[in-house]
Length: 261
Image (tube, rainbow, N blue to C red):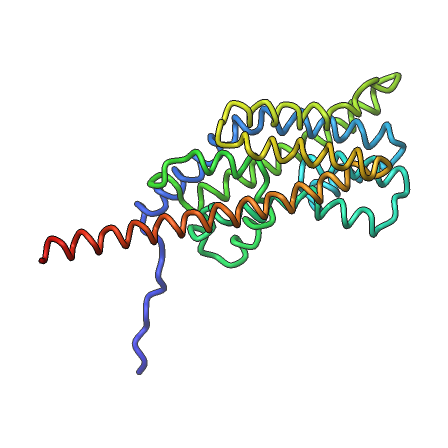
């Protein structure tokens, strides 16, 4: 007779720990939600004011979920922009997420489906909040709760914006400035972090070159050029770090040899 093996279950302490981690992730999302929710409302308003179907707002929140890109896509879809141009713009705008993968604590998420969702939901705000957490306080459930909450803020804000646009008697003027305002705030935040000043200078060079070389497609050219310059900066920084490590190793070896002699 084959002995019955008990099915492994979580202990009450583990359940309590996971609940605390999930609750902490939701609390972590509150600061990001203050910025995500208004932008989601702006997205819903823009969708309706652009003459697009209301369901496009929640559809973008699920299919794209990329904040600034979604605001940009509304205008491109309304203008019947060719799919190739939309794809290239998407690559240029979201290319920065490649750099997020280098330091986002994705290894803490164990389940493969949860890990796939975490990669999909790696937006700017979630990355910023997760990066600010002490390493000892990070956990898979906390990160997932943070990311799910951020997406709920965005999708919920979009639905609120749709409802407001339907109820308002006239369109809201100047709402298309929401995307520009978002990047202006991000730029000002980057100015406060002095280590990001080189990136700001590279952005200025990219914009200037794009306006001079391709004034008819300045935005796309600037984004592509900026992405290339960021890659070069990252490569140079990595090369410099490797050089410093090599010099430290040589110094250590020399010191050790002298002490042995």
